[in-house]
Length: 178
Image (cartoon, rainbow, N blue to C red; front, side, top):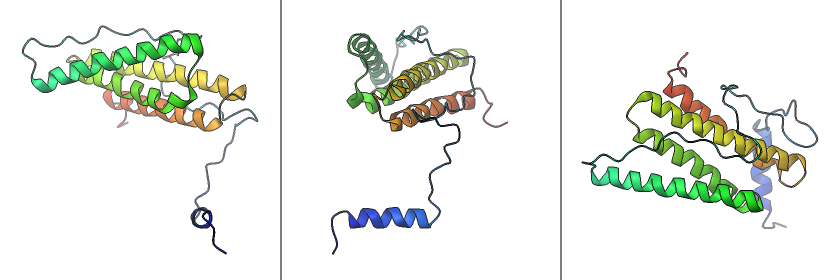
């Protein structure tokens, strides 16, 4: 008899039979996945729930186009969102339900700030903030996973986002081609 779960079981069986095995979790502990690689060991998370220091926010040009005005307004709203999340998390701790949205906002807001910068060094500074922020998300997520308060899947998602930010920074610095 076919049930509603039958198609899911079929897909799972096909993935396994086609070699679709998950990666070998070498180094994982009983409490969670092993720390992921970092290309930037010198870029540290602020730790202990501290906010990442931001570089100066890009200034909107006097003769900004409508699209530039939208992007600068978007940056302002995104930075306000991240600041409010930071304050709320100091009081209540991170919300598991907002995890994906908060990580995506950090990825997008800091990328937008870098895109609005003119000088390459200032673009790099925003991408470094992005990496630091996501290292802090990953650090705190690891603590919550190890305490049993979060599913280890969240830690993989946090590491994936941080590695995306690191890849973008490597590309910006021209190191992605080496």
